[in-house]
Length: 154
Image (cartoon, rainbow, N blue to C red; front, side, top):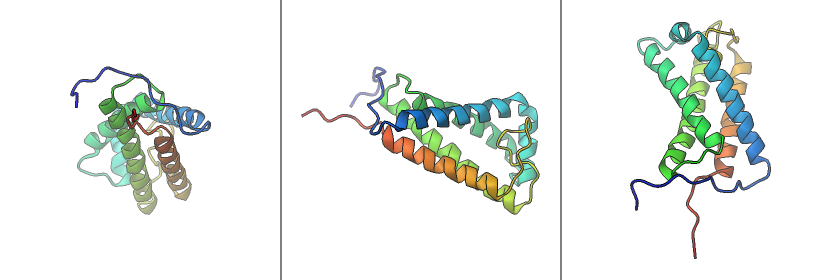
């Protein structure tokens, strides 16, 4: 096993629908990250209003980092195997965090769900939870279709 591997192109998607869905998910995550970064200094306050108290600064930083890290997998960038897997896991992780945060925001009756940070106030509620769950389905489908497994040469 090599520790350092040369970058390579991603494997061929398992379905014709995977690449457009991957680009759609990348666009959604990019819009979310840019909006959160636009008024980043207020983003931890939005998370604190949701109920993330005590570690809202760290949570804000990790959310944005994971959203940006997931883009490399979703945009078919030329990567080694380990960075590709880490990027895919970052996509799963950030969507999982948003499902939990939006459920918390709905329970706490928060005004702003935080999806677009403090830039655009997206109301918390079951609609935003449904949006996060649909993102979870989308990231699972794209992860299945672009699984970064190694090809077996026979």
